[in-house]
Length: 229
Image (cartoon, rainbow, N blue to C red; front, side, top):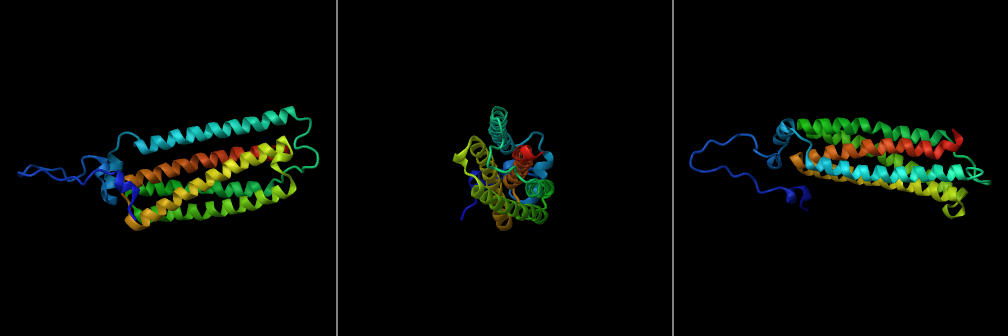
């Protein structure tokens, strides 16, 4: 199975003939296909790579989406005579807050992984992503259990509260799942092929994604628990 990052890369650099002097380091960062060359390219880079800018644009769009959902939640809250409506208990505080704290913790190993990737250290990079991956999977599994328990108590179609409540949480869980898939892809390619410039950029982009998802997780859980705060 081929690596999609390698398919995007140009052909290997071929030094000119005729005894001309050739620089030992790759002239372009996209030619860095080893951990050492990728680290050299990362140290010499003066601007944020295009892959990182692509992730910035993506998370900006996702932030707009969640801003709209949270604003809708509070608009419906302010218009309702009672929130949540009669027959629906207020959400409990402990378990969602503990789960969110677990997710926020993963920013640390992801940050360390991004730093190690820039230094060309493959094993610490894999270890950092693996730790974050395990915690993130545990978070998502735990939240799915809580989500299922909420569905047994009230339904999305039963009220405006149920509709926006489940929409907000489902959107957040979907973004967590997307991040887990990104981590899984990185772990697969790093364990098989090691670090290249494209994978260093991928690790940095994934770390940025998780920073934003974790901030959004705080906003989502505070919105979810606002009736009980």
